[in-house]
Structures are given as structure tokens and as C-alpha cells.
Length: 223
Image 1 (tube, rainbow, N blue to C red):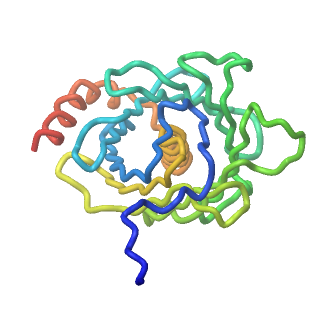
Image 2 (tube, rainbow, N blue to C red):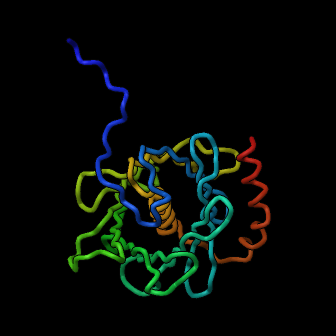
């Protein structure tokens, strides 16, 4: 008797990998769309245009910061740039905290000068003391092609591709996230790389246009 084709989804490549929280770990692969709006706002939706997450600036004079929000604008994590050091380093904390006890992970560039994206991710709760990274982001951000892998392995957890820009969104990306991967973590990492590649400009103009961002986002999502 011939084997019947299976309708089951392929088995996940790795066990559940929760970083921001288990509620962001999907049992099946997930396609999300990341749209970048003025004033460093990011809106993350699924393929049905349902808002999943948002990222907004969290401005302070001494630190460049961003905040990861849920669809109802509730803070999930704070992304905070470390000013000192030769490498570009960002720390991620739970909620709006900046206490070391609430740190989730830290990221830093592999080299002081880079022509392509190469960022190491170290979890704060890792059990070993070695310097092996837990995740790594590589690719070309300017071309909209980045890959997130498990450490230095060949196991890809997320792949980004640039899409055609819309009337309101400056940049638009499609991201394929593997089953069992924390998609909030993926969004956070892409937000950090965006901040590394496009340093925030501190000027009065950003304050003036901030009021129009909500209108632009609303119009784009209802278009």
C-alpha cells in the first residue's frame, strides 16, 4: 500500500524558546509585517493586518531608548542603549524598568566598525559563564535582508525580507518566524538593529511631527 501524504505541519526545529514571554511563542511558523513610520515608530501586524506589537521612542537626554508595546500600548519591554563602550550595545529590560534584575538580554555588535549587520545576543539568565552568544543577527539591513540564528549554529529562527514601501510607511518588511520562537524577541532585535543602523536624531522637528504619526498609522492600516 502506498503511503498517504501527511497533512501535518513539519516538526519544529527546536523546543519552545521563550525570551520576552511564553505568550509570544507560537506552536507554528508565523508571518509578520513590520512597517516603519516617522519618528521611529514601528507597527507589527500579522498577514491579516491585525496589530500584534508596536515600538516607539522612549526619549531621554542621556540614553537612546525605545519601548516595545502590545496592541493596547501597554509596555512590554524597554530597549536602552549603553552609551559607554567601543561596541554598539543595547540592553533590554522588562516593562519600563532599568534595573539589572529586570534585564532580559543584551546585544552588541561583533566589531567596532561593520559594513554588514553582525550582532550578538546574550541572555541575562544563561546558566553558563562562557562567551557564546545565544542568538545572532547577520545580513544587510540596508538591503532589508537579515537572518536571526540560534547562536553560531545554522539553525535559523527568523528571516527578514524587504517589501515595497507604502504611502505612509517609510520601510516595510516581511519576517518569517519559525515555530516555537518568541516573536516579541524577534521584533525587539529588529528594532535594535534599526536603531543601530539609523541613529535617532534629536531635534525639535521630531516633536512637531509626532502628533501626526497616529493619523498616518491609522490611515495606513485602514487603507
